[in-house]
Amino acid sequence: MEGKGIFLVGLLIFSIAAISTGQMPAQNFPKLFVFGDSNFDTGNWPRDVRGPWKEPFGKTFPGKPNGRASDGRVLTDHTASFLGIESPTPYQLKNTSKSIQQGLNFAYGGSGVFPTWAKDSLTVQIDRFEQLLKENVYSQRDLDNSVALVSTGANDYPFYFTAKKGSKDGLPAFTEGLVIQLAADLQRINRLGVKKVVAATLRSTYRF
Image (cartoon, rainbow, N blue to C red):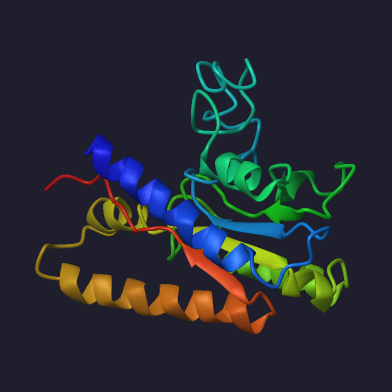
C-alpha cells in the first residue's frame, strides 16, 4: 500500500508539471487554488475544535500544531513547493494574511463531495471561491495562470455507512451519484475560469 501511495503522489505531481509548464511566462509563477479535505487542509479547521490544532499534529513541521492533520507537511505543501511558490494561505486566514496572490486553500478537514460531519462540502468551498471572483479579488489573468487542486470523497463513504445508515446494496447508486456530483464540481471550477484542474485519486479507508 505504501508503494502504491508513493506512485499516486508521483502521478499527481507529474500531472501538475505537465499542465503548469509550456506556455507559462518564465517570470510568472502559477497561483494554486486548493479544494478538498484533510489531505490538503493547511489550517481551515477551527482552532477551538479538537483536531489538528492539538498535539501531536505538527510535530515534524513546523514543530507545533498548525491546522494540518499530519505531523508535518501535507500534499498541498509539496505541490506548492514543486511549483516554486509558497503554500497557499488557508481561506479562514485570508483577511490577516500578507499575501493571497499565490492562491488560496479552501480545503476543510472532514469534508466531502456531499455534506458530511464537516460544514464545508466541496460545493461550499467552490461557492467561497466564486464569491471572491465576484469581488474581483482575482482577475481572469490570474486564473489563466493558475492550477486548481482537488482531493475529496474519502469522507463520504464512512458518512454514508454510519451517519446515513447506508447499505452495501445501495453503495453502487451512492457511488454513481458521488462521481456525477464531483464531475459537476470540477466542471464548475473550470467554468469559473481555471483552465488547469487536477483531481487526486479518490480513496477511502473504510473497511467492510
